Amino acid sequence: MVELLQLLVSGLATGAIYALAAVGFTLVWQTSQTINFAQGDFVMLPAVFVLMGTTMFGLPLWVAIALASLIFILLFGVGFKIAIVDPMIRHGVLPLAIATMALSILMREGAKDAFSAEGQTFPSLVSDGNISIFGAVVSLQDLAVFAVAVLVILGLQAFITRTRLGRQMQATAQNADVARILGVPVARMILLTFVINAALAIIASFLISPIYLVKFSNGELIGAAAFNAAIVGGFNQIRGAIGGGLIIGVVDNLAARYVSTGYRAAFPLILLALVILLKPEGLFGRAEERKV
Amino acid sequence: MKACITSAATSRIDWNLALLLIAALILWFAPVGMGRYGTYVLTLWLVMSVAAMGLNLTLGFAGQISLAQAAFLGIGGYATALMTAKLGLGWLSAFAVSGLICFFVGVLLGFPALRVQHHYLAFVTLAFSTLCWLVMRNEEWLTGGVYGIANIPRPSILGMEFKSALAFHRFVVIVTVALALALWWLVRSPWGRAFQALRENPTRAASLGVNVRNYTLLAFAIGSAYGGFAGSLYAPLVQFIDPAPFALSQSLILLLMVIIGGSGYFLGPFLGALLAVALPEWLRFTGGLYQIFFAMAVLLLLIVSPSGILGFVEKFAAGRRTRAASAARAAAAATLSEGAKP
Image 1: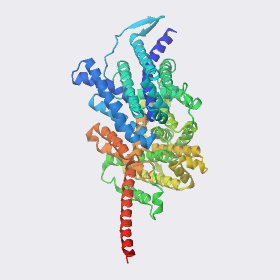
Image 2: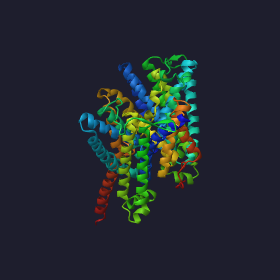
Image 3: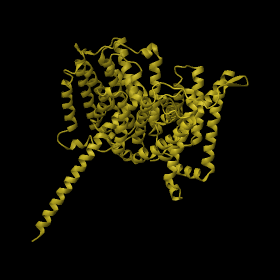
Image 4: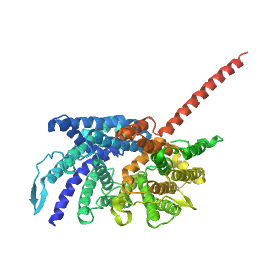
């Protein structure tokens, strides 16, 4: 029982990070039909930028974090939208999806060559240590990660539903044509979703890197988890991505402990297959009308 | 993605076919004096072309992203390795079984995915390729796990042995040409016409009575079978297999090959595989940088011409023809108006 509680907490912590990546993924899909196969690498890269800043240029950690975030948002929020999505979106979903695969290879190999092929430690933003809740020993880091991720998601949810800007963004996501008629600056809203996606990736990166080390190949694992989370939860709803992320994190952790470590990665995938078979719109999604 | 395989049918000689046969003839003699390694790279190129040909059917005709082609390559490879190295069966039967298994796995995978929505096949195949990789790595009793299966024999058929690198290369040339011809025939058969209708306009195809889902499924299953055939050639080529070359990233590279060459073009996969398989081997001296250049080239190419290199060539040629035609028209108009003067 105690062990189960521990596994649940650490599963929720990693799940919350997956949720951050998955939310960005669904936002970008909704506003501009971009299936971003490089999403995992988006989460990998900001931490690499930070470590490059501290080790290669000798910057203090906080300066490096600020600078890395700024550069990342410019390159992979604004730049990604302008240089890759804009010229390709008119050719349809398929070439764009494949372009993001090429981008993924580029980011991965670039990080390997410019930074390091080995995993590097990333400074933890909270102190190490454990506290005990109902007899279960829970690491402070897991709790902090979970708390930060939940706060970020609540903040985002509040922004989208409560503020004028957020509602305009939501309108763009739901129906860009009608939004345009109503006077919403659609192009600017789409750009905003890309910036938010990059920002979420940065936060996810800083949360996950102290746990998993910083390595060029991390993107594959994180990307697959975010992908699964978005599909299991539901592609067209932010709450779907959040629920999906938490479920994937917990299932992954429980399967590794109770079933088989070798097939740890298989269980989220089996869950994915079941959802696609039985409830294709996702556990928390709403069914989409099929367009002719 | 527009006319390509059919466009050549209007001219008397099918240039695709002629090019294929000329290339096969060149490839037959090419490895002479290239050494074992050079021959190996050429053969690998052909094997990957077979896998990419199958994916070209799935992507270029049915418009479906499959992220499991490397997994099918692996299934074919392991099936062939197990049947020939462990059970001592002949290569031909292993080849047939590899293709059949992949065909049926393709049907099983594609059926539920295509029931839902188009891009769901990409998600299902993504999950499938990771699952396959896990099985290859974990089931040591069957696949040897990370240690793989070694000593895979090269085929010997009707008393002919294809043991040396050169003999096996020539054997692969024959098989590749046979598989390419089969595909060439397939896209011209009534089935193939339906595939083309599907590619050009699925809604219209459906209104003309083509069962879109069944034909999409069939294209995917045949494409997967080609992955299995390629795997069946890959195992005796390398003579050792482990799970590494069948990971998800290899599926992505196969997909990029098809796109670079030009999806839907008969010769596209060969061109794409040449750039993605043979060039990295030849440019190994650049270290890891080649992958970066490759990815950047793909991105640029996609932005300039989403229909790949052959699409770009065709667009260029079409533009020249249009200019030539309008020049001719202008000249004709000038003479006509001169003739109209008294």
